[in-house]
Image 1 (cartoon, rainbow, N blue to C red):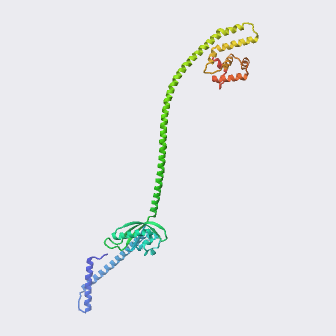
Image 2 (tube, helix red, strand yellow; image 1 turned 90 degrees about the vertical axis):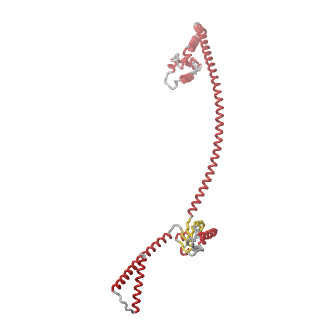
Length: 382
């Protein structure tokens, strides 16, 4: 508990009265004090004693709380993630936390009393000296990045935040320095810089590839445009050719129709000649005296001529079927019911040759892969 001004005045008055009483007793004066005054004075002394004891108890509690707070702040100070140094005006380390000692790979006891310049790269000491002078002159906080050397010889970058220990109006009595190890930050910056360089290289390479690809595409586009123009010219030529071919086809169609008409006219003429001249002549010859061989030959000739001039022969002789003259002859004999052996003897060929012609006839009539009888199928043309 803190004393009030009233308590201080009361204590002073009580002290004065006690001193007067002692002085009177010492001089031997016959001072008669009343019992009531003595009791009041003793009571006031007792009250004052109790107040002093209470004040002493509160002071002890305050001291314990201050010591506990001091220990807590010292623990926070030592375990801070950054280093703290206190320097005198010459740059000598007067106080350091455990983090700073670990950074500089030195015992805190040995660290205190050494110059901070001893832990700085030679080329950076001048910058540190100039910065300390600037802080001392301006009483402002300044930052500095330097390369430090630990007690073990390891080099690493740090950032220093330097400020004075005194206020702005007092001369600098030293410096407070905050040390931050920026090794990871520098490594990250280096990695980022390398990544950016790689990215720039990749972008440059990709850009060059895209430029080359664009050139190839432009050339391909030109070629395609030229090809399109050429196709257009060819299309025009084809249209012209198509028109010419259509005209030619019309002319060919006219010629084919005329040729077909001429063929039909010629066939009709031949048929008439056969019926009017050849068949009557052969029949007259057949009426004469002939030996057996001659008669068979004339009869066979008559049979062949009648077959050729029949509607059966006309149907089988259609160009769409594509039967040869020999195949027409054999088809007519099959239609008359002759066997392959009889046909072979009559035409003076082997049975295998007749079988070969029969297969060709079946193929051209479209009944190769069926069980249809060739003779039955030929009767449909009669």
